[in-house]
Image 1 (cartoon, rainbow, N blue to C red):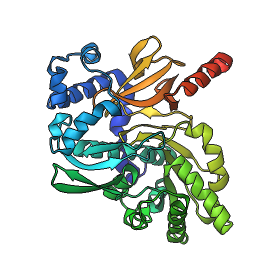
Image 2: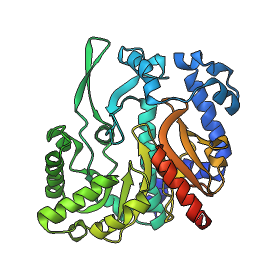
Image 3: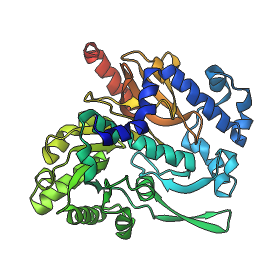
Image 4: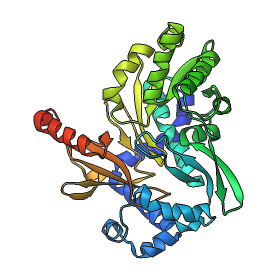
Length: 376
């Protein structure tokens, strides 16, 4: 292994080690999380100090949804972070609202560190697996939304600016070393906070102009946005992105079924490059693709995963091939949070997040299982 690859191994090694024994890793994660919950009034109200195992956790702590979080988040906005957070907040962020009303969520130091560390795992794993450290010597196309959109009044006195989570995370951590965002997040912010077609076209033109004569080696962002950029470049400049830049890989986030719904079309525009899935949301970076198979592998060392199945609630690592259900994530922020996604096991720590928890998605999945279950 090359010297610079050795330097990356220590960053990603905790993930690799957690996959060797998911049960033990989840036990350690669980213990750390309970200690954090015990510091909050929410945790004390649900007797976090009495939790000794997972069965206690499920019995004492209800499943949380964003709506049930609102009273506690209102307390945080009034300056009372201990209502539900185990440490002070750094900032607020908002979601894209692609599946409904945009959510506004707090960000703590630990949460931010996990976003950055887990967010880098897909890239580092790619470098180590492909022995392609050259990707780190180039620029990465920036398609993030603005990080400065609204102003929030805290404790009735002070104010805090906030914006979309993707832009905020990008501004606070613009990748690393020479592998930096192009354009810078501050340039994206300067174009304004709109999300209309014309707003996106202005952002796409900025990305195109800033990157045109640069050594671009990757793109990281929401899969449909990357796809829309490719179409914009073709329509506006009569070139495919693959003709302008030699990208080594595309790292795609924030939507479901990326390998099945987006990969083929993305390769038509960017060339035959690896399309690497990252399963992430404003609330965390939960899993990423580890090899060429079209599945993601969880970050067992940072988040605690349960799945509500038709046969009861199970640990994610307990699911057998073909089992599926509703994903419940416990993080440094919130215990037993319903992230709103459906997940299916493919065996050996491989999983597929196949859609949002909606009636139509469940019906489609059951019909697929009925007719094509023999393929699993």
